Image (cartoon, rainbow, N blue to C red; front, side):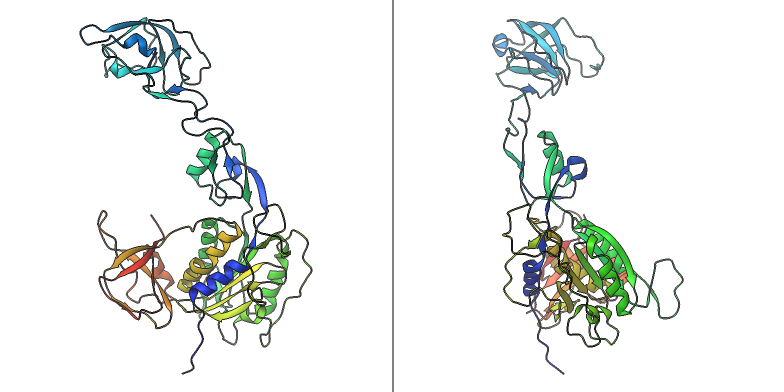
Length: 465
């Protein structure tokens, strides 16, 4: 049996990160910003909160007026104002006076503390407060310290301070913080516009009649969902037959309106493996694409502008260590499933990933090689998910010299240390598309490990909450 040279997983990942271009900056309003990656820090436009305000429904008081209050001799204050949230009133408070105030309302300048409703004499928790008229007086049975139940101006964020950092995704909670800080627009990286193509004459659309030799196309739907989860935008999703001219024409027709291409199927050494025939420059019988000059600032313009300058042409995200790093190349990567991997830049400058066609292989290949590349194009600072140690509930074999990724399911009860078992009894079988739905995540087994035993610790990436 022939001995093959395998490229380590980390080396193939590193090549992807060296080659993919950094997308241009864009300024967008918050209504369009969700899911984008910040290209520049988001800086507060105002203090948060913008003024001292009440943390409770109750009464704004001068703390000095309350020092003598006791249960036996409560202090009685005149209530001279009503301050709902949103008011701009700043009523004067003389000694012995208070204002009824609601949570979030600005604290009067003359007040320095808030007494909650429930701490006032005679408060009835069963009696509704909403819609009631302002009382003339309020009695307090205990002193209140200055600053009590007051949110000071700028206690959360000060004007000019960073709210969110470049490289962070504008997830819902982060978008809320940016809006609260008075920021109306942010500078982000453009979303990668991605072409997703399933190849194979055997493919039909889901729901169409399936004759002998045909199967539904699941990969394009899988990858479309994954691209969107990575912050990308799928501008074309479809399938082509094993005719090289069809794939070549699709690549040419989408060049002007996309930034990256993902192809599944046809990446191995079969006689009809169309992706290799079209994408590999030296493929026997290949149909090479014509090299066309890149328009400055387009995805094809890879002139060496330093990373991080912003606003310039889209450029590779790291130094190119080898002269052939950019060329599309098909390698045997030390991974199971997903050994055959194609990657490089098309003549127009777009990165292209050519992944195996078996669904589990395509899934693993995306998570390990494509996802990091799309995130790097957006200058994303952190991965979408981390790998955490868990315990296996059963054992299985792992191929020598190849890092193994196995779909698994959590079998431990909530609150227990996480234990996992294979999602299917046939391990990481790359063709088991229908059983992928059982998986809650992946585990990775090092290349030096040939057997996993029950009770071993492995790294786990959760793929759902």
